[in-house]
Length: 334
Length: 179
Image 1 (cartoon, rainbow over the protein chains, first blue to last red):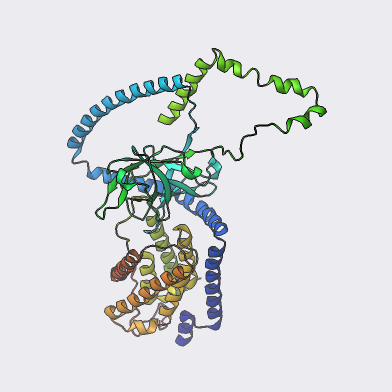
Image 2: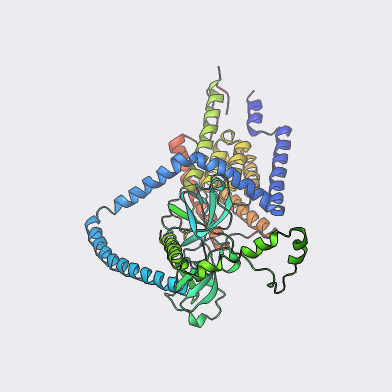
């Protein structure tokens, strides 16, 4: 009797062996399929994450907030000191704000005078960070916005101050943000003020490497890093961080985004820039065939371009331009 | 009526799954999104092996596959590979439960550490063969060492909190059968 039960417990039966072998085979196959057709499996992964993680939503966010509160409470003791510091900083900030407002007005005026059209129509979707990757070797977070909210793979994500990462993997209600610190993250950047192009490549540390700088001599510690918009993935000009030099003399980036506490993130809806694919048509070849079929279309087609130069040339343009500019300035600020 | 032996077994299986889910859940909390300077131990692996060597019937292979596959998928690992390796390692140990039952903790620890090293090594080897980008060598070794170091702690905690200990010689269950 005891022997029987033992046999049952150790699962030595041949059926169990066969099942085990089948499981091992299936797992191996899954890995192979993932290696061969990664996008399909990754879509499945996104769908599964989408199904599993939001069901923990009720617990993930409160627990995170609670732990953050405990952290904050620990600094309660130094409240007075902190308060004094904050007041001081606030005073400085007011001065900066005043300067910023003046500069903004000046900028708007100059732009209006130049009749500049600001290109990127940036609007954003904000999301709450639900979970992080759960692995020490992967740096990504999960947001509670997804395909439902119109999120598309590749869009840039900021925390309001600096670039955080880009969307990589979209489920119906969740999306994964690959952080700049992840070992597979590569982002084209420009280093200001020298204007050097470089690649910001994550290496699983808090300070990503700056690689492929054209002329490293011109880059100094403390220079600003902004996204360059090369490759058409990110909009240009998003603040990334500052240059620092590590002990090995390599260039690294001190990220502006507060990576210690990512809670709300903004996903920037970037539209793909219009690409100019062919050389301009100097001689219009397609007009003649259309003409015989529709003779009345000719005056309309001819008339259509005529009104448009008028408002630009005459007095209607100046009121329109500042409105567009302030709107653009508003989105850039807010 | 369900007999008490099946009841405790089912209860402990559920407990194992619940604990694993808790470990997964805590790992996913976005407490700090800075990259850790030191990869922590793989608690789930240590927990699974500790329970497996004490009460193999509480840690069925199906539960191991389900939990580790879920972890693979949620934590962005190559799906299937780590589950496969963990399953193989666990079955290797499961076949030696009776042997381990008589070993002192130190020897058991050494054996578990060896198996873990083999598992981490095999994982790296397969990933390298299939040319999958993977974490650096240093962090992986650190994680393996940390997991091995956490093993006795988890053994102690399981004993204290859940009464998971090795079967004593001649021990009988609630129905009077030898375990």
